Each structure stands twice: as C-alpha cells, then as structure tokens.
Length: 225
Image 1: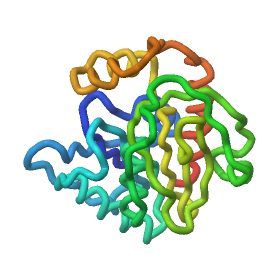
Image 2: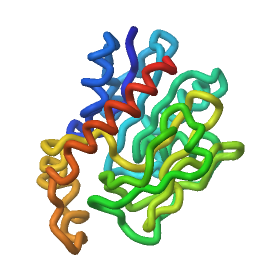
Image 3: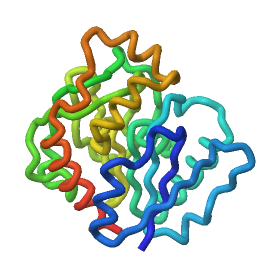
Image 4: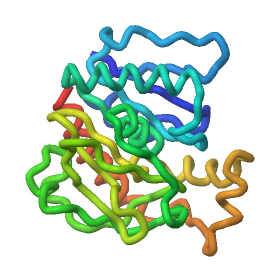
C-alpha cells in the first residue's frame, strides 16, 4: 500500500506521518509539482493523498496548486482518503468552494487546540481533549459546505474539519518534529514570520505529547485507507 504526498517546499515534508505509515507497512511517495516541468503521478495508483504546508497562499495563481485542487476535487467526489495539513487544508477547503483569507493574527508557535462536540464521535479525534499543538500560519479558511467542524483555537476558529467520511483538513502541524521546527525557524522563506513572533519558539516543547498524539491521530487515519 502506498500514499501520495504533495510537497510544496523541501523543508515541509511528512515528518511524523512518515514513521507512523512506515510502522504499518505503508509507503509514501512525494510529488513535488513546484519543480518546473514536474508532472503529477496518477492519484488513482495510491490508496490515499496527503497535501502538506508551505509559505505560499492557497489563493496564489500557481499552476501546481490548481493541479492539486483539481486532484482534491476528484478525491472528494470519490470519497477517497485525504489529509490536508495547513496549506493543504486550505487547498482542500478552496477546492470545495470555500473561501481562504487572512487570519486576524498570525498563529505561530504552541497554542492550545479545543475540539468541538462533533469531534467526540469522529474517527480521528474521539477521546482527545484540549491540548497544545504547533501552529505556523497567517491565513485561514471557511468551512466547506456540509463539512463537519472539528477543532478551534483562541486565535483561529477553524482548525480542523472533515468532509465526507475520509477527507480531513488540519490547520495545525501535528506532523512536526523538534528538528523540523528548528529548521523552519532558520530557512529564509520564514524569516519574516520569525521576526513577527513576540516570544521565542521552543522546538522541543510538548515533544512527547506531540509524538503520542501524532501516533494516535495519524494511525487512525491509516485505518481509513
């Protein structure tokens, strides 16, 4: 079994998702459509799709983002497993006709996540209470029509949703490792965001809890494949 991962920059890979899938014998393959001349693999050859984050906007008129949104529309129509992370969640929402816009504030660092009542019966989030998770975004999304709202934070109302039975958009970064966070703070693409943060970002904060939660949530997503 294999899963196709759309990546938008080299430093935003699957992180903890890769190890969770590997432990279950599931292989992932990256599609880096942002490279000039890159072509999309056949999504029907994969058991599921994952769309990662990136510093660009879901509203940017970029050919590879248009291609990904068309693939997402077909995946939703076919009720295929999808996991969108940050930009990936925004692309999933936009592919379904929802609006992506600037969040009132940039949400960068560790902030608590609260789950809705609907999350209590959700296949991924049942039994999980309020918990600190890592965020790095300046935009947000409206909920697509008929989507189930699953999570929020004090700074961003729409943090997670499910559409259909197997398509999820997560605004937060449950996949990151401490090493990934440290790298994000160093790369030139993120310098403006880092300067805007009014308190230091500690990569190792909540690492044990994040690892446990990633194993649980991504492991549950694997069961949908």
